[in-house]
Length: 98
Image (cartoon, rainbow, N blue to C red; front, side, top):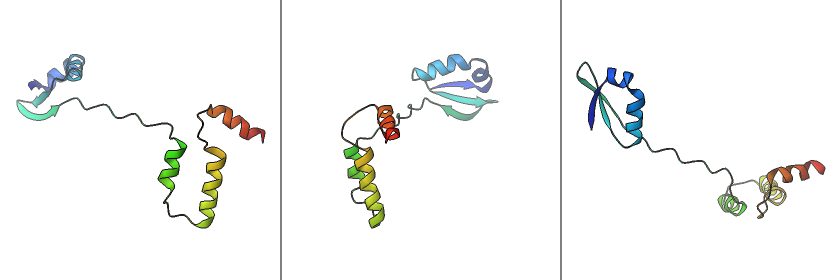
């Protein structure tokens, strides 16, 4: 781990960020006293945008729902979630045609 001053961090931030990306770690000092550690954090996981219908069914299979909520859920699953992968825009336009 390299030690750098706050001034070096300010003046050479581009170089230091590239070195961080490449795995280097830095101890930052202010007036010679340790202030903190700079290290690269892993990138966040990308959120999943689509969930398969069978996955949703399994997740909500044991959900505590009232009878009315359960009926609504089943209707929504039948109307919206099918097991086919298709164009969501086409599906929306089919709903508008109804």
